[in-house]
Length: 141
Length: 461
Ligand code: HEM
Ligand code: HEM
Ligand SMILES: [Fe+2]
Image (cartoon, rainbow over the protein chains, first blue to last red):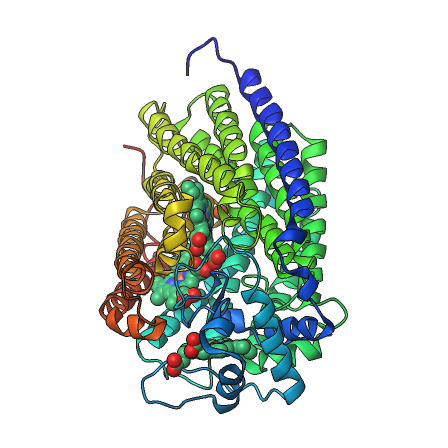
């Protein structure tokens, strides 16, 4: 870099540029929170869904699965599993784990009670109805 | 070593390397579970191995950053560290808290750990990378505050350089962005939206400041190039990092229920995120070419150039590969993401910490400037083994990812996830093989601390 461009000019670009883009980001984030009610399916959040999210988190489902494409890539996407498989399948599935099929990837048995199973299903239903801009591309997730 | 108190960095670096080994072992466990699904099941389910793998990574990088700061700041400030005792106390607190947390992951079912640690009071667990019990998170904040106090006081009482100032801004940013890990609303979209304020704004924001300042410090030391020149580069690089990286967060807001204008903001700004990484590469090579001396620590020079190149490849090139919304629509949450995650983390943050260790450790172990020839040769072998392995891990995962996208997402007859995973198993086997070679490289790395330590120091050529 040539002599006319000094360190203090570089420093000013850093402080000025950063401040500007922090503010722009905050403005966009504020706008996002205003726009969210139309997309994030918040009307569907019931105490049961809240329990479902808690069960989801406290059993670390995200450590093997993705949810709306985020998480681990070891096991199927679950953001749309409610549409792909339906409520009964999900409940039965959770009850019969692990499959024990030799060599096949395994999912643990979490010993969830009926209330928790229904809550997980409610949470996955709520997730599947979030407007995620037509993602995933198809039902396989 | 110019100041006695810089020596507190040593336990930090040793712990970092120790945890690094643990991280890789659990990576290999997972790599095997990818192809032998019932390996170590139910003793270590995949999710547990993954938590250990990623959390150890983050914790050892934090050890590395803190150690680097304890070494760098006194030298830059030309004064002793404010309180070496506090630094040592925080070291043990952090190490014990980290060890307990990892033991908790391994010994107690996760739901039990949540209950034991009172997750009900303030539920923050069960989200990727932020799996730590809330109480561990509180511990991290306390350690971070004590650390920042110590570093801040040292800078305040001494010489204020751009390098230490930028490092401090990066570290403060790290602590501040971590606070968003305590915000966990039931609303999944809001949860995800702010989760990225920690995760993205760390690796593509404030951590870049930490990386660039450590790189600048090491380059000043080993090339002898005028500080004014190096600090000018430093400011331009970090300016570009934040100008592109902050709005670049939008590349995670395409498909999580956030408004669709993020597809534009995210694509445009994140497409420019490779710029600061590219500048770091140009910067490092430029300074080395203009060097005023030939520093005897050739290994440190290799790490410094290596991190500049690999960060650009992993973050810049592999990041760009999947960052545009129309591409990300298909690659989101696939092995492409994992490929990028590995090379970016390794190239930028693993390698910058190893650069600092390589530069500082010889002095902390009583050398004037560098290790013996023999020890350096071994260290450089480990550099190449680990670096080439991570390149291959990335290439194999990319191949797996392309096939996965094709078979599961793009073709006319999309196939189920598990069916597709079966078909691409070959690439997972190859990834695991490359991982074993990585481990061999890591073993050589550790050996380089012991081999040739009685030999005379390498001299300037
Ligand atoms: C050397 C052998 C290694 C192996 C076999 C390995 C394997 C794995 C596996 C299987 C996963 C989980 C992927 C999934 O979610 O399905 C993973 C995740 C991860 N690993 Fe490694 N790993 C290795 C080394 C490393 C190194 C050196 C780093 C750091 C530089 C690293 C950083 C990460 C990160 C950041 C993730 C999370 C990725 C994401 O969420 O996209 N790993 N690793
Ligand atoms: C050193 C800097 C970087 C590191 C350590 C890093 C690491 C990661 C990791 C670990 C993930 C996976 C997160 C998850 O598990 O959900 C990720 C995702 C992503 N990164 Fe980076 N990254 C860096 C820089 C970049 C840059 C510069 C770009 C763009 C040019 C980029 C683009 C992306 C995108 C688009 C995703 C989302 C992938 C998806 O949709 O699944 N990254 N990054
Ligand atoms: Fe990002």
